[in-house]
Length: 387
Image (cartoon, rainbow, N blue to C red; front, side, top):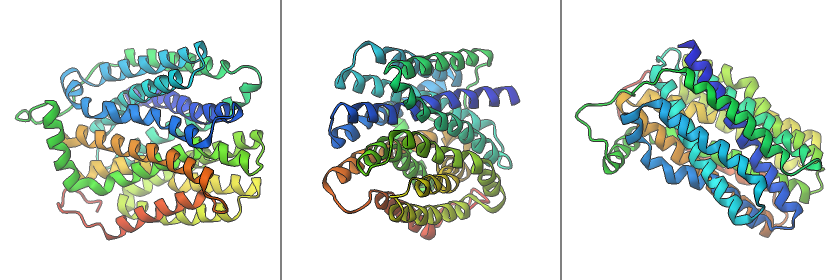
């Protein structure tokens, strides 16, 4: 079990590295090429459109073929797409490659996180999913630093990321394939997946808001902040340091928050981090003229809300029976995608058309909305001790 867990989180770390690199890297390349912030933000949504498109089709092959083939195919799609970026610099070609990365990443994450939630117990679920989030954040923190390589070559960051993805990808062949638990009376067609979505939504809708919020937050910071920062006078080298501060903060507190959620309950911890994150981004909006203040706010925000995706998955697993976990994990990915698609697009429009109001207020408002929903939510079914 330990080998399996470490290999899975290692694969997720490299996936986090490629995602953390590609959003700010392409945003900066397009900004330097004179492409508008709204088009830049819309282009950033392509990776999440890919996640959204593939999501409804993943449950049936997972239950039929098991975890390993899904992860292998997803990883292969990601590394080949990264390798192809330097061959042709075109808006549409890069849009398609980012969309393919979204498809591959979703297959990879769906397989790994469902596998981990399946073999984890209630007592160690928070810890294991926190470890999953921790390694993703480690990769995500290092990724934006690749923007410094633009001064050497536009192709170099993509080549490095493809090589690291291949190294992680081969390790999955060390694992023995497993088939997820499922109800033998359930159909596994495309339409039956949507029927299970309605069951999952009925009992665990609240658990999908944190992944939505994390997707919104992550994509907005990485897709819009580099553009916004350059427009308010922040140096590009400072951006490459400020952005990773969020992921570093996540790394520092991912495990403590996971363990605290095991002890105090997912809902209480989620409410605490949402309201605290709201206050942190309000502070970022007020202090955005200072690079040191932005670094501090990003670091604190990472400590607080950087774990919302993993906490949301853990909360979802608390609320659902095991045979609904694949559908629940798919819905986590779908809501993450919704947040990731809407975030950069709305953020890009705000940067371009709204003057005098910091785009950090957009993030703060989103976090406050999720806090209010968590505050009033009451579970319909007593399936978990963590209500």
